[in-house]
Length: 363
Image (cartoon, rainbow, N blue to C red):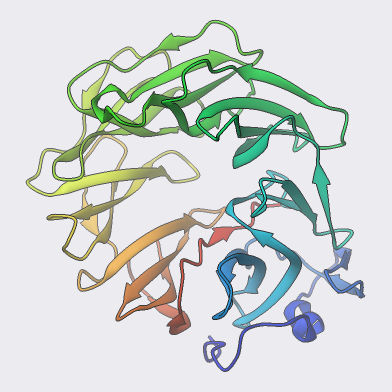
């Protein structure tokens, strides 16, 4: 592993070096953000991660790609990123919201950033359709309090409202579509009465809305299993929360964790056999990452417990995990094998804000 890329903020001058390592029989044409084209060979899907980061004098972030084999980082779009950059399932595009509520897509094949029309400002890019042709996007209207969900065609052919809102205090979060595009799950509740947050399900056309969680505490951060049959989620509050699991229709609910620590924000491994999640004693203590089997057994610590370990992302093959460590006012990026061995530093602790790493899906 090369030395971490730390001497300056990345620029597009590293464009050719970023893909220089590719080898093999498969040849692709990558046209990147500065308009340059470079022929590269080989499979690179498991080597690229996207990052968002703000310059020292800016309050908005920009979109970057990192080649984790070379340790090189390159800025690929000049548009400001407000929230939630998200790879398409085919690994060819990244969608994100801009600082002004616009919706953007960066295309890795063409190297350009385009905007898509919406009736209101975009709050977050929530999910892609399985064929990478549509997006689920949360919008806000009026004074920003009315949050609604839309399906947006990536080719610019329009949008469809899936969830309307007549309540300025009900917000949407954690929207995710099933792998077969038949239904979506999401969290909705009062922005002031947090005990009313629950998990819901709707069909792909926005109909047949059902509340599928119902119990004590706040239910949030639902994650559909890769096969779409189960949902793992967090129930509780910042002082006391644990992981639960249920079928995708809300049946057979069970509790996975019962320790004295807070467990939250679970993420499925690509094969659905394991769960990666964050744990801490209380909100002021360091947070660490742990892994366990999907049935709650085999729990083990993944990362150092002396810092704030956050925002992990699985590699497409499930063999590696990239994650942030926040310590002493800075953010560093680490890579580890999924069993917690072979921990490697990718970016040193001189990045000021969240990096939001996300692994490029397999192509």
